[in-house]
Image (cartoon, rainbow, N blue to C red):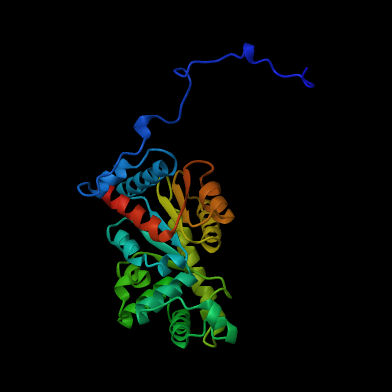
Length: 317
């Protein structure tokens, strides 16, 4: 005899599968793609309408609907996006009137400037920090810090605008792959959000804390104004920033709402290689909790960003 009592399943009440709600059916399945004859649009249509593939298609629809209705698509980004070679893809979206403004951390600005001016960036940190050489590239610090100091003293420009104009004034050899230069030349808002002490140019004798702080503050107020447009549509993309841009965005959105903008009903999407606390809370969940949609895509930027861009352009036709 069994030591413990067992449930009697003979009186279980069952239901028909015909009456049960089911989330998946063959119409949602992926379709084999003929790479020899099919277009990229056909490949997109071949993806399953399930989980992240369905959400990526939804994001593409939200982006194109936002632009059709003249709502903003704000790109926020970290430095890794530039380091893995994605600026040509992003610049193409800007020129096709998909991305309407760019906000980046100041490490991204450093990589953008170095690429534009000298055709190289991203030093070997582990090797160079052992003898104190890490971050001590003289040309980078002098160009960026002196540009910020000059703009602080002689203009009302922000961080991103000042650097973009400088790259054009200097006829930077690789300005065509510079987000800063491109946005300035096309009159697209580009803001840089610095945290003093986080970047290599802050280590150098040309560093001016007052100039850096004032110009990045000017850019913060620009982002606040841009967030006022997130009313009944619009998209905010956060690609590769785990701390700075999610924190800045949460405050900028709060300022926009505090000043009376009914900034609700928009879509946010995070693209990163891992799932992080701040992007989840400050981009995906909190800003959209009273209307809108928050999405999170995990994967390598060098694959996910070109995929997103290609899907947008294929759907745009």
